[in-house]
Image (cartoon, rainbow, N blue to C red):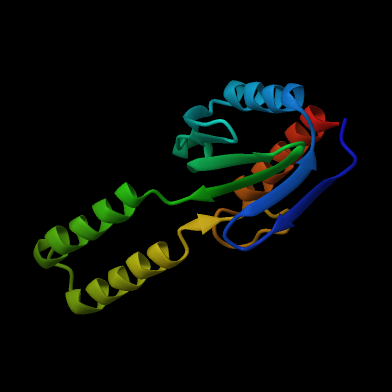
Length: 155
């Protein structure tokens, strides 16, 4: 079915390219649906799937976008911090910190601003096998899982 699977880790997302057909796409789509993904958008040449967070299981929200150009498929996938979480953290920072009775609240406020800024700047995370620091285990686990699903679907 396909000649090769190419996976590149681009920092903010992981991009896989493969050659395949409708059967491979349907097999990949069904495999993702079995992994608790839901279809967010489905167009003629594009499919977007999302997976909600399961924080008690050390799983963050994830997004998979499949674009098709004839027999060529381009699949982008990444873990991300939802805007709702960033907004809730920022609102809580402004509402709770002034009244929390924290000694040196200005320092805590400054650190919270730095954390919010980092969350906005580094909102998406690729699924590289040598991931370090932020969400290391889920990124590695999902990278392996999606590579296996892609190989099963398109080969």
